Image (cartoon, rainbow, N blue to C red; front, side, top):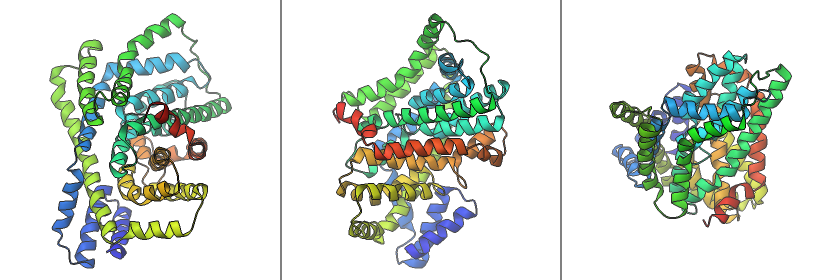
Length: 427
């Protein structure tokens, strides 16, 4: 089956078929021509892949993000980011990066950050004298932290594939790597802004005004504290946290910012349902794809082969980085996690690599795939949102590729970045 599965998948992806359909159809083809299993097995495995209580967190976190990113909440966070760093050289670019980090604590999705607040920042930067393609490339790069700073949909899916980690420990493990990536993108923006003369014309606001803006934005930013703190102290599970996040978002949107009304709820639920359906369809197809791999014994064969090579942990991590970056060229993070983690995680554990550390390496690598063609979902989302050719945006990416690569190497070879917070938090 595997001899048919992979060629079928690559052909379907090359034809431009969406990832979920490409994986599901390739499984149907593999079963039809390479086995005696009935095709109904594909539907059954897709259903089994979605029949999970922890997965309920995905649509609820998406719904909470849809409610929280209403106009007033978005503007409050953008104003806070601009008041903190807008006066620096390249200030609007810095505000773009900082706001992406703040929104990561609300949405848990890189694509949501780029399509909503990120697109708004691109327009603001263009009005401020920045090249639109550069502003788009910066938005793509800064949105990478969406699945890394908690809450994160990718981390929830990862924890379902690896029993050595928990959602709570991964949420804590992602905080410092997310901050590191934010800092590296800020440094890249500072360098390019200095070279191109992207100066800020705005003076630094008085501290009292910054304080007022911060207080206004604080109810939105407290969502991450509520989620991570509640999980850490055992008040609720990650799935329960997602439901609480929805009610918190409703309270903040309706009574604090007053930007959300009850009559907006049906449309918001519909948008969240459509996004959730797309995500869960990918997960179901990935489950069926992974089932074929397991039936064929491919994970066991690869594990035995790699262990027989007697690699050191450092060499193994370097090889994993190259593998995941190559995989990310053609596959989105969620199916990547479902297909690769059951293969790679046991090997890393056998080599003595901390499970939380390895999880963050995998998630960061696969998320970086969102910034690289030919799939590069972030590139196409941003270019579509701000009417840019993807090619013009890609030409502006090299400084950010370098910054993200340095961040990835630091995350890989400084395990404390991923393990310190989970340990001090009791995970």
